[in-house]
Length: 302
Ligand code: 13P
Ligand code: SF4
Image (cartoon, rainbow, N blue to C red; front, side, top):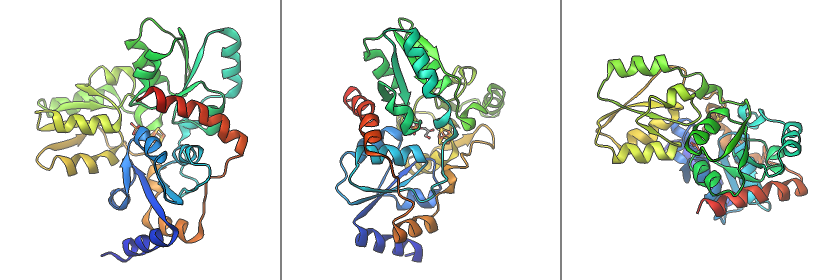
């Protein structure tokens, strides 16, 4: 066994730690994870962990979510600078303004957001459950933060709701163009196009399947197609290929890389476990306030 992996296993035992990873991190990190999944799975599994320490291999909001759901545990982020820019693309001031303007508004917070934004929200969602949860809300007015693209995808399916949009976006998904998809499709006409809903509406319009990373992986196994154009961050290729060794997967461009997810390395996991740092630290009252919309999500998503 590789020396680094052996060291991680030894530290995991010593610290009673588990490693959780998102599908977008480097293959070698996905390989050693105890739990790997999409944002919803990572939140859900965090409620069932009985280890003392969680090493969250992903970006800050994922570590914060694990901490909010497990305030008494140590949650380590191997790289404290691995942050999702979209998580910051909404403001408390704007939420307050919308609440003043619309009496019955529900503030729906994509889990890809800071803990502070969660403290002022009514419910959290992930791409895997946003449609189900927004549909179940009694409110007509929905202020969806921070992602404009996921908001538009859900709004189109729920014409009975009045959406107030926010202008946040994921720079990785937002940069993918309809022209790139059309060119990839022209090269491989029999390939199915699998798109993440953080992509622009003109890109989701070209999809055979739209869903979260887990949804895309599950669809690839069910589909009778043998080729796929994958329109999300490239890290997901690791699981797609592992589950479908006889199928072929292509990307639409060469920019489908989230630089923050790629900051997580085996060396940083070792250092985090050795030093018990960087650990997610959030104020207690802050965690309590942010827990309410997270718990509501877990309840409504069941
Ligand atoms: P999901 O894995 O929940 O689809 O999230 C995508 C994403 O951008 C996470 O950062
Ligand atoms: Fe944020 Fe996009 Fe990276 Fe996910 S892929 S962490 S949404 S920048």
